[in-house]
Image (cartoon, rainbow, N blue to C red; front, side, top):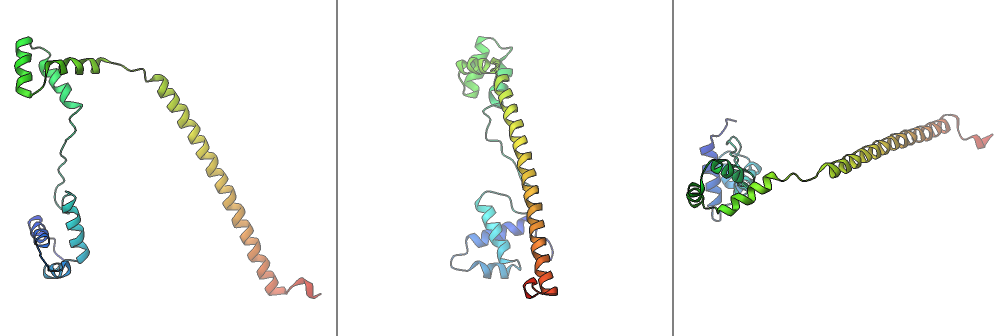
Length: 165
């Protein structure tokens, strides 16, 4: 089956979205695509995801960390009047620049929490290792027990029950 172009896929999805009372299966059959494929395309379109073959464009919406740094770098060498003009142009306040500068200059003491995290991680790894060892041991014991049970049943079938003697 030949690959459909992005435009063709978009046209089919648009047709399916504005189908009225027509069932999806008829639209899929008319366009020679699978019903489940059409459902997947519609789901992707509704979720804002790209259709297969369409390039995925990442839109950065969280500029909370990059914008302050950009503004601080842009205003670093400016005087008061130039900073005021810059702030008016970009819709920020001069006190925000000072807050961002102070936040970036802070160095919180993370060394103690980092050590606690490392100790907790080591403890969890050791516990995980111990649990895996226990699981392997129990699986081996279960396999041995089931093998002995099967052998006992086979022996009874071959030589008969020992109670007959």
